[in-house]
Image 1 (cartoon, rainbow, N blue to C red):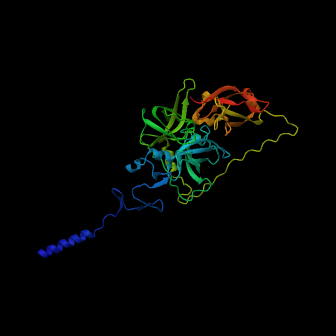
Image 2 (spheres, rainbow, N blue to C red; image 1 turned 60 degrees about the vertical axis):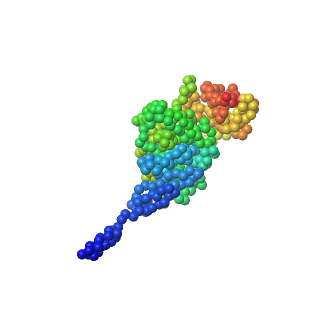
Length: 444
């Protein structure tokens, strides 16, 4: 009997040992052992992926970033939400006009490592009409590889989702600098989005981007939320919330990420308000949750280079219209004819040329009190940058030279000068066909 019981016990043990147990993969690390579920097949595509969303890293500019970018994922994702990550995921957008000429810059944030970029609508189009700046909705993308250096032109992107009233747009990267789609699916740094946490008055925030006041390199500016407003950028339909914050931002930061103390993007910089008489200035941002529907729609967009997606089909730049032929018996100059006038910006003390300064003339219907510096291109009629000799050239018309205009001078480390109802003939020397040299005072 005793031997029978022993035999029975051995049989039971053998049956228990033969039963199947869930398979696991054990991945050793330096300090711990992480147990992960066995991979499963994704029914939406022929790709093997872990049953629970894990992250993968890519090394760009010495910054390792997660492939997934929202705070809906595990705490492990949150650990990668650092200032370095936010900086690496912030891009400069070169704004292209109808002929694909770069006419300004904005900022954006990479929200998907495959190449989806969040920015403002007014960076890629006209809020009033809802039309893109060019027929294909494309713009240039510059990446900061080293925050000590200016960003480098790396990609061409195309708008795929947009809302003019919210002033939000999402772009997809469609090509590298040679115009060809990426050979493989990109794995870029992606910012961490916080789609659920509401910001409060007094909360500390930081803007990341390329404001003109910061020069050519990436700039961050700290501040706090000081209030809220509500309006529509397009002037049509419903209004949307805007966050008022006091970071010192300027034109060029539009579309850039506003991050919280956990380095998560909670808003999108998009406008500014200033009072030239009282000297006050506030910056405005759209809450990130306003972009939720656009982001969800953009997630479904096919991106060239990923999963065999085809290259984007583009119409190309608009061709300039043929100039109206001038009658052979009419040699007179009309008011619409243009001619180039050159001049110099000089230091008022040293008489040295001021390099990379700007001379700006506003459209006739505006003066400087109307200007939103975060949307400067809307108000500018003409602008010219000084060269290594401090010289600039503007193409003006007789009509413009004979009218009063709003005129401004801008240069890093120099006091900004703006004036309304300026008579350009007063600074134009007809004998030399040059504008009289203009002197600027260095910032004290």
